[in-house]
Length: 490
Image (cartoon, rainbow, N blue to C red; front, side):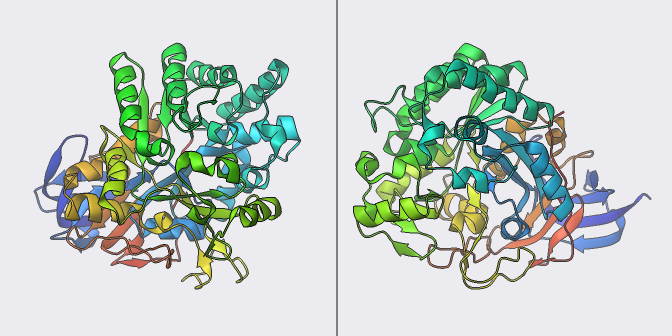
């Protein structure tokens, strides 16, 4: 009999691509799934997993966790691949090199950043391949202004260089520069289409929120898909569409029926997080989203902003400072319904919008574990996938378990796999697929992080493997391994 490096016995194996949902044994060797069978298997190591779900490792399309600490929290939430696609980085080569040198618990990958390329060309900002450059310049009016065609061409040149270096597409956070000319967005989409790459868009304002917007944010994405043929990925549709989610869904459905490829994602929370200097958090425009200054929580202090004057002061002193934006009351079923609709929309991926933890007073040490009490983040960093399984599957029954697994694994893999064929080996449990696996107890799995205790890890994820190596074993994080590998475009 063939002997494998690792055998998982007696678990409920869910393979979203083939529809397999049955008790099977799984044989793994060399970081690859080699056998999925009812027959007994032998291996150097054998782990019995009866009563547990054996699922493809969860793939987070929208993770701003660029360090070990943040990715460890995500590993405890069932994530095996964390991709920075919405904001992106520039240049991507520097980001890939840094991650490879430092090591990562999870597989990682990056899109190129339209915003940072724009900051570099129009505002002279540094381009280091770090997300911090985006937040450092988030409030600069220079990069947010409309650009002349020669400058647009220079921006496109930077993006094209990153695509040649393995970027997984183009991240376009147009919502942070909402007055740019729509023709520039079309030019970015056309560039992506020529290279066969997706764009990942944080949409600009909807016309219901800003009647003076140069173009409705949802219509802009649909138009670009139709005119250029690019695959347009609509990031965190829940937090940009808000109460207009049904109208946006109808538009997406229509353009899909017309042959365009538009994909969506959402996260199961009623609050977002971003740099407090973002254009859409200016005191004079908060009312468009039904917000007040008190809707914003400043992460550095943990306190809600009291009034417009305090908000202006913080935005001036610390424009890149992270802030909660509470746009829905999660305890109000009528308000959470908007989140639910975005999460359960046809083929919507689960994506966290996670952010690397903020070290308030303790000197930053991303290898330190457990994290000190003063380290904070958004609870979605620790709990997005556990919360999805708890709320939408077990408590409310809006998704079947198999469908939730599909949206956490296969659906996100399929968003990226045209750009990166290596993703065709992820999001599945079949012979030949990567041994990135998440093994959890469906009766127990849950988030624990809250807005008061933001980095409490999820529970119920018994084992998590990255490339066939345990990063979580028997519910405990392994801090002695960093098995993550890069995901790059072909």
